[in-house]
Image 1 (cartoon, rainbow, N blue to C red):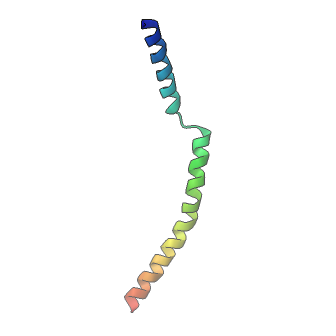
Image 2: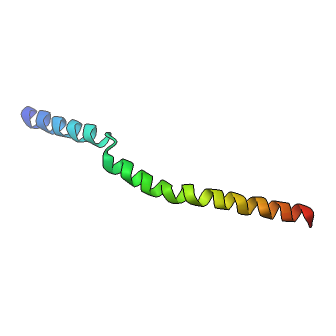
Length: 58
C-alpha cells in the first residue's frame, strides 16, 4: 500500500508541476484574444469622446 501511495503522490505532483507552466500555446491564445481588443479600443475611445463633445455642446 505504501508503494502505491508513493507512486500516486509522485504522479500527482508531476502533473501539478506541468500545469503551472506557461506554454507557447497559452501565449498564442493570449495574443489571439488581445489583438481584437487592441484594435477596437482606440475606435471605442474616439466614439466616446465624440459623444461626450456632442453632449456638452447640446
